[in-house]
Image 1 (cartoon, rainbow, N blue to C red):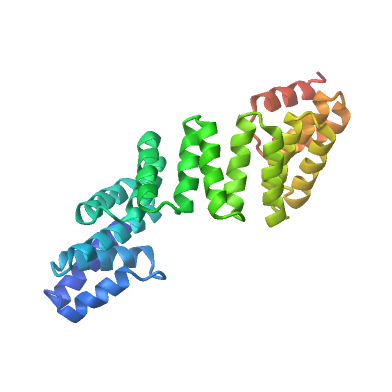
Image 2 (cartoon, rainbow, N blue to C red; image 1 turned 60 degrees about the vertical axis):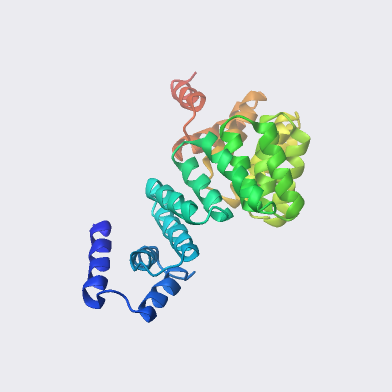
Length: 278
């Protein structure tokens, strides 16, 4: 229904104004660039501006880029990529179009293509931290954890306080069994955001990996204190105690995780056996 409403809105603009006058074109260009415009308004105004036939090539590129981003926000990733392609034909030097197209490709599962697009964005804009982080995330999906860590490290070199980069590098470090690095990175996140339950849970996993079970327990405890509905942290803390021979202490945590809907085959089997007195 939203798509039909959007088409009707565009049709109404053309019906009431005919061929847009220069002032009307300028209005649509301005609205197409507005940072506070709604997604639907961006699509309408960018479309009207494009169809006016009065844009310069550079203006058309920006209009397609902005309309593509609006489609992305509506999760219409194929339409977004189409507009980014059209933007590239008009101005191949817009770094943002490659980064945005990469983001859309990731959503569609075309991760190898996405990495190439992030690389193109970074060639045009070498200090684009968001592209570095996006590239790292795509590399993680491909199992290239060492390359991903390098991409996140590059982002941190430009923005030493970027908590997202630290968090993701911490995840890569976990995959690489670099527990010390992971602890350090998640600690950086916690310093920036002391109420980040996920950072505590991930640091706990790094402590587990290093065999520091008491520290892991403390961090899982902090995670569930911050977020009582955090099923992963309840599960990991409960399993930590069960594996340590402390089932009586761990069982309530596992029951809580199960009640919260945590989906883990081991947990489901354990709870069933527990219910049978196993």
